[in-house]
Amino acid sequence: MTDTSTDDRPAVAPAVTGPRALAYAARLMGPSITSGVILRRPAAMALAEKVDANAATLAAMRELRLRYGSAPVQLALPGRTIAVVLDPADVRRILVDSPEDFTAANREKIGALGPFQPHGVLISRGRLRDERRAFNEQVLDTPQPLHHLASAFVAVVDEEVDTLLSGPGAGAPRPVSADEFLQLWWRVVRRVVLGASARDDETVTDRLRSLRGNGNWSYFVPQRRRARDRFIDDLYSYVDAAEPNSLAAVVAHSRVGGAVDPVGQMPQWLFAFDAAGMATLRALALLASHPDLERRGVEEASAGDVGRPQALPFLRACILESIRLWPTTPAILRDSTVDTEWTGDSSTRIVRAGTAFAILASGFHRDADALPFADRFAPDIWLDGTAEQYPQLVPFSAGPVVCPGQNLVSFTASSMLASILARSGVALTNPALAPSRPLPPTLNTYGVELSLEPRT
Image (cartoon, rainbow, N blue to C red; front, side):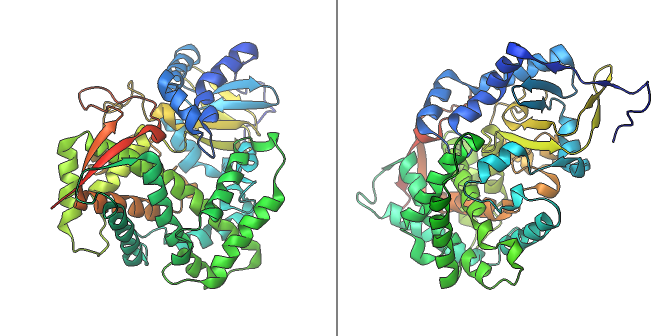
């Protein structure tokens, strides 16, 4: 806490106000808000790709650094002040070094996630947050590279990929649209999270999708409590059934207090798996357009025993690199709980308690001024220690609020890559992602088209 009783205290950080603040906010956060922060809007994503909207975020962050220095710059918006983080070291400070000064239960996040997970750990505080976090880590086996149900989950992935490849026209090159791939992914997710009988229960995930659409509008639309209750009732039904080899069964057999709301944690898992599906599809597109790296993926996928879970370090690195290039969480938000001091290029500034801090991953991850690999597919940075040198690379956030499902999500996604690569050659028919050119800052996931040719 800054001592404000002395006359030599640092000055309050200057804020960008009026039309200029609104213009910066539109360039920095407009692309992700328009495309859908909680539920992606396909038409908006197609338009964002056409105009390369994320390039505006990169340009705006460069301008702010040149104009105001490296300390966070406050945008004074109607009803809210947002401090835009510009220095990679400050990313680490907020997420890792002093998380107690920056709560993850940010006001905008509560408004966005409340419609479908009002008791979720991400928007909880204090002792209850600690208990919910511990429960999430227990069910998701957070510290373990392989979940204790990994063998069953690999079997689910392989079965669904086999079903895809053995359909009409088996043996010939098979076009696969983004929509078809994501339907395949959701069948896997429902079986992993809810159980085998949920495979074709699109109603439960459609209800979640509808509630997430409401979350895109945060506090600006009324909450649909009846719809949320129906969705939660669906989850309770699957937990009551406790089908073997599912996360629902792990929840059913857990022993935690009612205040933790075990079933109320499950919507976040489904939400996180949705983002992982997009990252997996993009990783496939990247591998298909980088033949040398695809061959490494095929070798890794073919090296282990069929049906046995593998750590798959290279394919996991491909998933991380997909998220770095096109973050599934474009902005990490925190609310400051105390006054904080920030040293810029030539001065020290104060940012008042209650200010929202925005870490724009979509800007940091593609900053060509700081990252020599910014605009190319470089999965080896996650294997050789390079990524650890850049605290601004936060595909799953960082610190005590790092995603508790990151290992399970990465395992499932890399297992999907391995299952497909071991069975099929992959060609990218849209868009063009030539390794000889910088990768675009904006990619419309729903426009990705692949062709799978079964291997003999």
